[in-house]
Amino acid sequence: MSVAQLELVHPAPLPLQHQVSEPRPEHAVIARFINIGARVLDVGCGDGALMQLLERERDARVRGVELDPAKAQYCVTRRLSVVQADADHDLEHFPSGSVDYVVFSHTLLSLRDPQQALKTAARVGDRVIVAFKNAGHWRTRLRFAREGRLANWRPEAMCSVRDFAELARSLRLSIERAVPVSGQHAGAPFAKTLWRPNWFAEQAVFLLTP
Amino acid sequence: MIHASGAAAKLQAAGGVRSLTFDAAQPLQLSNGENLAPLTLAFETYGALNVDRSNAVLVCHGLIGDQFVAGPNPVTGRPAWWPRIVGPGRPIDTNRFFVICSNVLGGSMGSTGPASPAADGQPFGLRFPQISIADIVRAQSMLVEALGIQNLFLVIGPEFGGMQALHWASAYPRRVFACGVVASAARQSAQNLAFAELARQAIMADADWRNGGYYAHGVRPARGAAIARAALSIASDAASEVRHRFETASAKERFSFAQSNEEARAGASHVERLDANSFLYLSRAMDGFDLAADFGGRLSNAFQDSQTRHGLFAFTSDWRYPPQETRSIARALIAAGAETASVEIPSAKGHEAYLADEPAFEAALTGFIDAAASARGLALQGGQ
Image 1 (cartoon, each protein chain N blue to C red):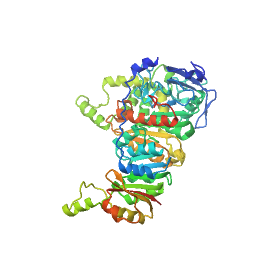
Image 2 (image 1 turned 135 degrees about the vertical axis):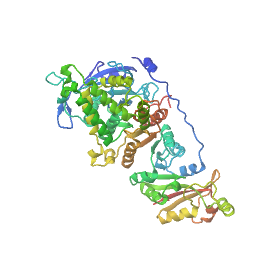
Image 3 (image 1 turned 60 degrees about the horizontal axis):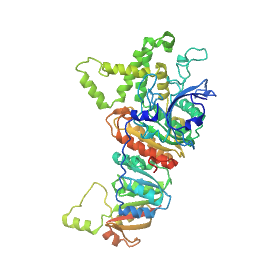
Image 4 (image 1 turned 90 degrees about the horizontal axis):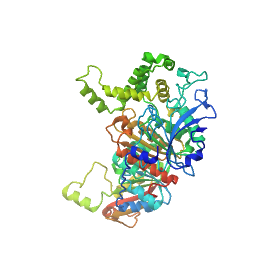
């Protein structure tokens, strides 16, 4: 039997579409935090856009965890090492110090116990990167003051820049760098003075070291 | 020694399908301490081995399967069992990879098994030694070595074959670059143990089984084997499908709902591929599989410091090897620090979804294989 005959037996090859989603501004900030060639664990990696960026720009060895079956499958189809798993339960199975960075890009606050997850992440990775939406932004505050409701409320924890700095301190994680992101742009890193990012940053990206 | 085409160098000739036989020069050391000789494995190869010998893929077949993964079985005339996955342009692309699929030790499609002649010239029957998944894998490893292949790019299989792939990755981590486990488990569940036991009882209750010695009487325990097949086939349907069949058949049939006549015939021809004694031995080997137990009860120890990339695939409606089984393998691989991709494919087709038209499965498997191929430095299709 020749290969040409085999082709009659087998169905036609599968068309594979590789879509490339727009890079998000916080992804660029995260990428700048990460050393070349580092091992990274992306918790809640979604469609894998950040993972691909880190592989491409930082030559990183990235693994991902994703709860949503469709997204996990999409990532694996895009050649990414993603495990369909629940970070609330499965993060603790990762061995200590097995990666250089654990990244939560807008995922930490959706977990059942963000504090515990952050603690586990600090054990698993040498450093932890957290990007989150700043609930202390003036627009959020103004809307809440005027209408008494949170826009686009979802059942997840809310956290301001100040809250997060306090959370990190309570877990004895030091803030190595912190960068505000508003619109499509990353702002100047901030350190001790929190009032400005707490009012004006739409999101913040923190790099924490245990 | 490889028959029919001689030396491994010939395997580098471009393309094509070959039916070959491997006669081991050494006896096979079995887990129970016995030695098995002579050992013969029948196998098929597809595609060409590259010069570096780095593109070899070993496909391990399921319990009621054979080596004819991508081409029809010349003995029974049945079509290839995994044509959607293995073939030109398919996820395991025979234009890129050199694919090996061997009939397992204990099988009945040309490999040494209970139907093979023992030293006295009579078929072994129940005198065939007890075998385990480890023995099956050791026999395959002798074959792979004889082909001159040091490292397999990928070892992959569904259910029973997935167990072999897991054992390969655990026992020979440096010889397996990537390991694919499809609708399988690291240990046979109690439910599967029960189904397998019923299937074996059905065969042994058939008067034609003759205590395993039916070869000499010119009969086969066909009825028992068909029931065995039906037991596994019912379990392989999705739960909703089983209910549907029951509800549609209950109006006509008084007691039995599982098989229409047509299916009974199909079942019979299915079983003919597999010798009834082979079924007893292989299902027993499968039932005895418990990878964690070999490593002090912790599955992650089986993969400690493994450099092998793992791809795990489960189907949501599979209740023989449900996604929870795959999740526990994924957890162990995570704990061992192994590079892992794991997905649960939404499907209504039950356990045999891995054989069916599931584009999401094919796409995810292709992604896993392509990622491994680029990490191994193998050219991707289209020269990427």
